[in-house]
Amino acid sequence: MARQFVNTYLPRHARKGMKTVDLHSAVIGTGGITVADTATTTIPIESPYVRGWVESLSMRGDTAAISASGTVLVTIYKWDVANAAAVALNTAVSIEAAGLTALKTVLPITVLSTLTTAQRTKLEADTFYAEVVTTNSVGTAPVRVQLCVTLAQTR
Image (cartoon, rainbow, N blue to C red; front, side):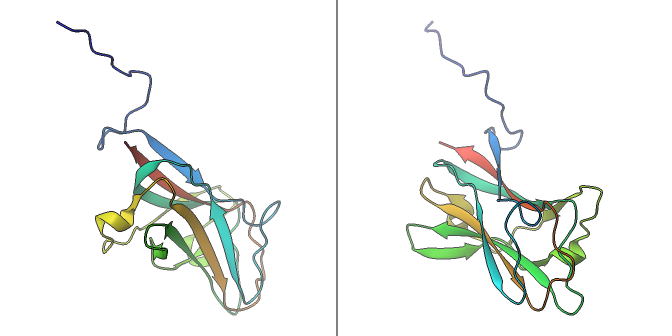
């Protein structure tokens, strides 16, 4: 019987049988990207040259951005190179209402259930980014907030 090579050192995702990777955005707030008043701020999310499936989205940080008279909304996108189009992966989430506190909480963001398999699949050249939209002045600046895309790598 021929001996088969088994790659035993890679962690395997329980459901997919694949390795998962957490892709993080640049830091938003103190020490990173500043969220401007009444503007849209684009934030890059690391996107390695791999194929994968968007498993989940999340947000973490020390302090959320707060606008007393407006909202601070975040949407995560996949730039689909093949179709030259941005695909929204979630509906806009209010960073203020999400409940980020000084407890360094990790909060899940719901992935849209209406996404097709092609929209949820990341090809090698596809990239991720987030847009933070503020509708008025930001009273409390965010502190070390990051957005995360969990990707199940495929071959």
